[in-house]
Length: 212
Image 1 (tube, rainbow, N blue to C red):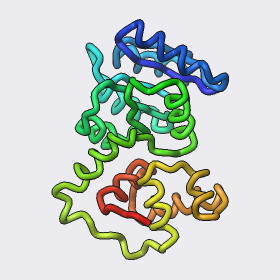
Image 2: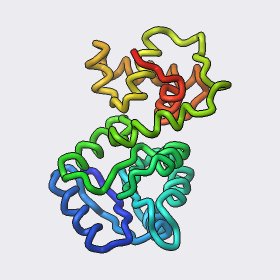
Image 3: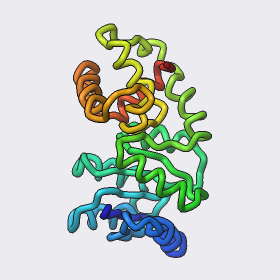
Image 4: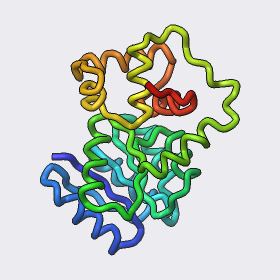
């Protein structure tokens, strides 16, 4: 069972999202919060596999809460939720290593598929949000677009796949590798590029417009 914390200030919206999430028998919303401060307090009391945060909440917004949660609980999956199709929010969320950025108007199937993808190591960004994020990431990056020469062709393939939001299983299928090999390659890539996690790999890929 995947334990999920859901932070959303509008009670009816939160209840609706909970019902949508729990359509999947693998998911259970075991914590509910109406602002970022409450979300952090819940994380202090119990363990969650996934934290879903609305971006706009009173007292403490989702971006600030997500940043604090990432610092204190680095292994938790963090997904940002909003009605606003604004690339600035997505960029800010990616900077502190959120695992995804979702829009509230998605249906239960899309929402739960996104949660599963994030749990499997994917970077979840709605297509039309990604279309705006990519140019923004690349803007004014002329001094940072070099590609590390120590990267192999296979490693570049994997980086490009991560930049497209693929999880480990999807990468393995596309490149005809085992999931274990993909995980090992990602560890090597993180070491070579001195990065902390796959979200930073995705940003590395987007900044360099890697397409394989």
